[in-house]
Image 1 (spheres, rainbow, N blue to C red):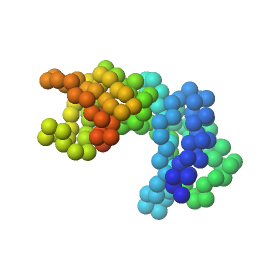
Image 2: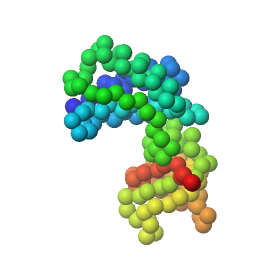
Image 3: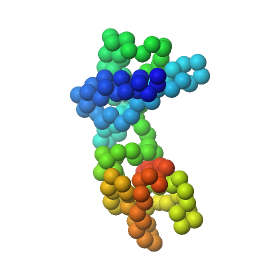
Image 4: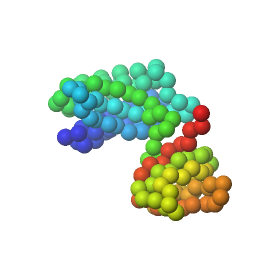
Length: 152
């Protein structure tokens, strides 16, 4: 049920989000405690503000209420994916080319499961990072998580 709900919400939300000038990132629909939580993630160059989330939430909520597609009672949340969000698609990879990223692998490669380097290239099947020591190419199917590196 949750998968179908995600797909229905995405079909409704994406055109609304794009019309408001934002980028659709993802949708999550999951039970948290007693409540169902529907979270829609948006982004934009320069970052997302609370007012942005509110505007998108109101626009999506209106259409979801009109169509009444979700049987359960739920809480709608529109959010930024955060600075440490996983890179998931070609659009994310393009935006992050030349930036430092963290790569977490499913299985060790050269006795390590985590690498940090500059994302220098990608294809539909691989990503390339440059570390201080060398260039490393990982097959996408080996990568558990790829995200921007955060220095504090």
